[in-house]
Length: 218
Image (cartoon, rainbow, N blue to C red; front, side, top):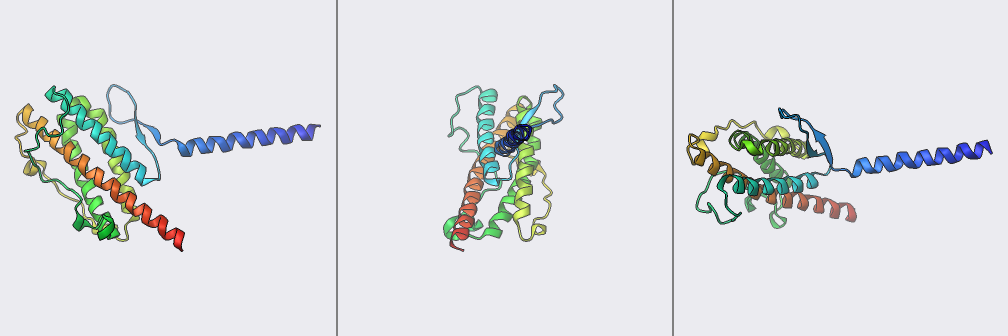
């Protein structure tokens, strides 16, 4: 009887451990404590699935863009607002080899890695200029670093991507001396990064789908 009870207890313990492991793997969120002086914690996605990271990042930047628009300009979100304003920031094009019909994996990864590196620098400007959203910006910055590290690990030659030296004042259109200029700059950065992450997510999904098809036919 004692041996049966011990066996029953062992099986229950094993089930609990297995269920806990499944829950840990399924959870895409962990707590992250940054330099927030208020002491509040923020959540960031923790996942080995780079497609999920890219999708989360696109969603968060999109929400941040719309939030900044409402907070600063006090207007309903309108995608055509400031459409006449342009800024030269990284974007993924057909020539980068990320699309199905012109696919070049390594070149595509280099484009994504360099773009993430550059937008990481601009997030510092956004964080300094859009102070009411600095916690969300810090969360985005941390996730950019996670995704960037993942992309570098998948490259054949990560050393081909050199560290960029960026002077934001040389690229931003509007004078940072005025609050209006800072607000417009922040909106343009978030708008362009939203577009970049949309293409990045599609590129990563394309790479994953190609890998899946390759495994099936091997």
